[in-house]
Image 1 (spheres, rainbow, N blue to C red):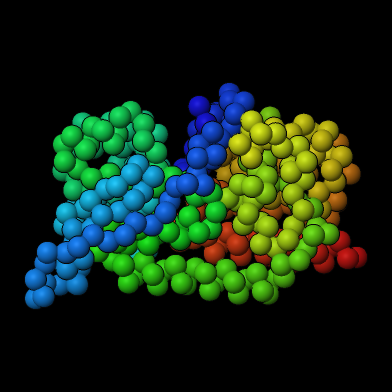
Image 2 (tube, rainbow, N blue to C red; image 1 turned 120 degrees about the horizontal axis):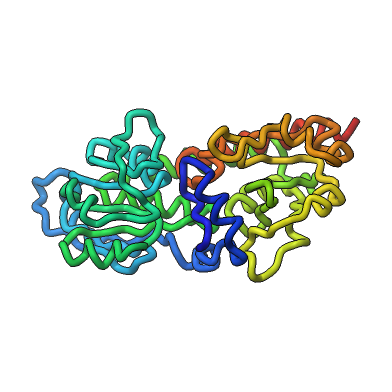
Length: 334
């Protein structure tokens, strides 16, 4: 089973990484997913509210053409990223339940629902008029479609534009197109400002992005997070070890990592429930004391949730990487 990057805790991903050889088969399919849909014609009268006037709307998520007949009032989100997107576009009052991994923003109506192994009977108990998920498993789309419930599958983003398009699409689906557009514009502006300040030409700075340890998995420049790091022109040590079968997430040996001498180590598995690979733990690994990132204290524990999602908090991840880049550049210059 391919790992699923949309989560609030790393443990399920680590298990998948350690048991799969083709780590993200889903990643290969992402390039064609996440495109924003086009609004269908509206039959609302001119006296209707702007939100009501935008329905019905036909969208094209990864599961094909989906029509939302009227503004949804009972949304169920089975994806932590989709949950954040829905709240960012202003649809929070329409959300009645979110999956057990959705933990942001504070106060979301968390339930026992699973996005990885969805239970249609449990979902239907919330009487949803729209369900959003990041993958179609356990017959989710077919089962809910038979019951007349529209489902939007918004998979893990393969590139920045995918993330933006999903936010815009959820804005259309919920009647909040204006707020969705503003959210995307703000994200782009913050990211551009951050990259400008930190500089986008750090090709002399190498990094290791740690997805998990024991065994060590990393993310290449072709992945979503790899492309985010590439905004700063960094050199990814995992690129040289990539194979067509690993989906951009190669397994690296400890010897390979140490010999690559990364100047910066970015930990996406440092949370207590996500592997606990803190900067202190990494620095104490046998043989790693020769690694420049260790010698210069350039090991950064990223916010695991932010690093594993592709929603409105993406500028925070970019900012974390920017700070790490600036510190590492200063250290390498000494």
